[in-house]
Length: 558
Image (cartoon, rainbow, N blue to C red):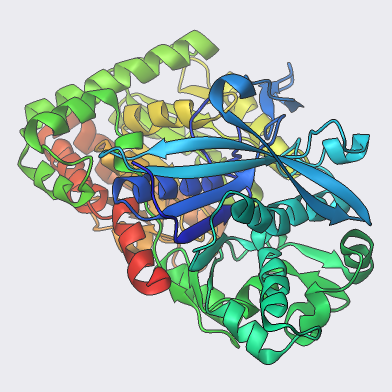
């Protein structure tokens, strides 16, 4: 079943499936979950992204534990439909040709949301232009701006060439796609017959655009020098809006998205407030992220839900009924998921993990503010907890950006800690974190750990995926967890005392493990399973993309 597309969703990365490596992490996986939910709910959407022929990168570790990046090799022709239609854009005065690939996301009822993936590896292009869409988040500012021209300006032209002329809303998932507003302004001026930019043209485009910002971290907001904009675009079309979008001689893509959108949102309630403070002159709403339930629920729990909650795949809110599933069945499904994770860990790292030992999972992008090594702040205290409470094993995964040496050092430190703790605490760092591995981790851990430095966690979604599988979180109160944490019911909060001191946060983490969580796991299993059931019923039923898409439809699209 096809759809008469009314919503165009633009994202630099979209996680369509594990063997299509057109995503790096949370932003792309969220985009994929958004499209899947739109297909389930029959939202008339079309999505646009870049092909990324060499992916983000394939991750391995050298003998010292240092991350090494390699190109990803994947079978494009086997996984995507190739279109013969070629669409041009102009970069540095050259005509750069874009080939289009298509992937159909099929919802539970057969409804299709088409995804167009743009590719400049076309024979007629110059050698440098053929590489524009090769790497996700690769290269320098010039490379990134060229990519954003292809995504934003080229993406609108691709939609027009494929007959999508009835789009009512253009949704920019982060500032990478903000140049689409420049192409819409060009179209608007042509329709109006004018040569100069008029306020009425801007307002007409604004009414059709929606902008979602995902991070308060400054590095997440793309900016380009005006000289570079001149060089790449050939004119300062974007800077005809000079005052709102250009600051200190630079074009700010976030300001472009903010200025040219009728509706702007952050991705959690606290993030919306943080973003409102950052951009006080704009009205910022919030829609808390979610995850696609059917994608992230393990096979064992999917069978359990199919039996007890028929229809949960098309109505994620019905998972609230999970609170009535027996403890025996919940634990049986969890143990099956955990055994599958243990097999992956022991096969790939020979870490000797035991299915009967309390397992903590931590997997996300490796970067400083996420503090992945916080649990090792006081290794002696950690060893004492094991002696008093029972065995602990910890599994990590996550990639550091190729240019983030601090993130790479954090990974290396964790791998060294794993070696030093052998015989006391089993620790494993799994390489090449992707959607497939993420699904195993969020389902097979006993506890999901998150230790960001507030208020830098805009939302976070890995804990939402864990919740669908009955895995409670232990997390700093930031991002979505402020909304999802009911202490002792859906998980536990790490108390930072509002001081955000690393030692204080680590102490609270250890206290929760030693005094509450691990004793409950080993000595009061029924109570622990009750927390698991409430995690599914309260958080799994709400923090999903079915609810999220319904909110976008109500607030942003209609």
